[in-house]
Image 1: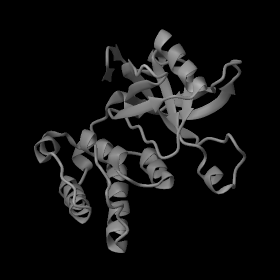
Image 2: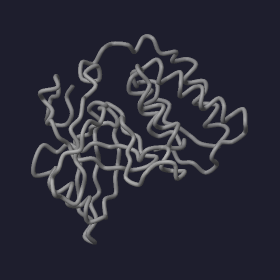
Image 3: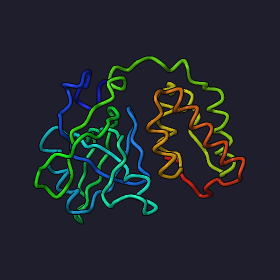
Length: 223
């Protein structure tokens, strides 16, 4: 997989230990683009270190049970996605505007002792994400676009349909999953879907449930 100026074809192309950025409701998927506004000092330090090194950051959500008080503080979801910093700018007021490009999902292993203000982990990358297995034909593209159009209509939103029609199924499914205005649990389910078809089916199912309930987030902007 080519991401920015780097190619990631096998697990040895990735470092054994990566810094992680825990952020609830944020979803990064392979080949996706995630914009971030960085302002906390510990995460500014994390991005400084990444920029000086391999430019890789692991995006994870806090453990879902921690959101309702059911887990210890600091617990993380076990599956996240590795991203490469492909765009970076300083705002002049101490913040960084960053874009991460998704490489592959990973499973957290043991935490690495680093003595730094941010957390780092050993990880097990999902090799199938790196190999670019061709499973795009299994996606029910027609049904996906039908549900997407229904969601836009329900929220009085517009889309660039020319770009949508040009997009391959992998880019389409992952992009729609990332920009979907769902909660943390739904985002994690999309991340953990075992393959592209399963992710597309999950996205369709969640959207249809919301449409049936009339529970669509009005005023949502799709980027």
